[in-house]
Structures are given as structure tokens and as C-alpha cells.
Length: 136
Image (cartoon, rainbow, N blue to C red; front, side):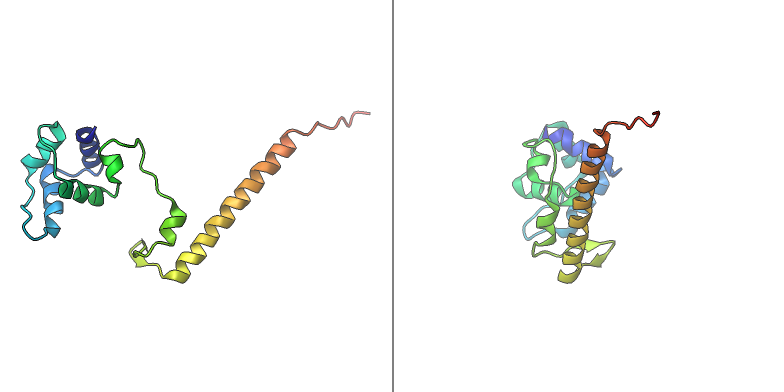
């Protein structure tokens, strides 16, 4: 499952093996060896398996969970509400959102979803009403 997911993520971003190796090598830790295109190709073909550190770097680069990357889950899902209240930086179009921004956006989304639920319930109610026969 891992080789297929890695290949799909890389191709989905339209990045070459060389491009991915270069991206992974941007933040090498102490004692880490640089990644090579052939190494990543071997991961995609299932010939080799990356170390935990390499798998984590891949997950971070593609912004997916390790569970998704390794095939443990079929979808990568995040709770947006938890993201708004997490400690890390949250950006939107390269603008860092402060705590007030996060709270206001959270309120906007909450209001939108409540309104959507109310609209759906109203539409269902009116759809179930009998038509009036005005031909008396």
C-alpha cells in the first residue's frame, strides 16, 4: 500500500523523483544522509522501505498522516475545529492567523453549518407538505 500511496501523492503534485529528493533534503538533521531519486524510486516500487524518519518526512511534505501514507487508513481526515485551537501556527494564503482570527473563523464556520442544517430541515419540511388544491 505504501508504494502506491507514495507514487500517487508524488504524481498528484506533479513532482519528479529528483524534485522530491531535493525537497526532502532541504532540512537534513544531524547524521542524516541525503535522499536520492533512485532511493525514492525503490520505495515506490516496493524494493526498499524507508526508515521511520524518512516516512515522517514524506508525510510532512505531502501533508498527510503516517497512517494514510502506510495504508492503515483509507482517507486522511482532520478535525478542522481541533486545528483552529491547536498550538501550532495556522496560515491562510501565507498570512498567519492569530487567536482572534482563529476564533472568528471558527464562529463563521459554525454559523454556516448551523444555517445549512436549518435550511436542509426547512426544505425537507416543505417538501413533505401537501399541495393545496385551489380549484374549488
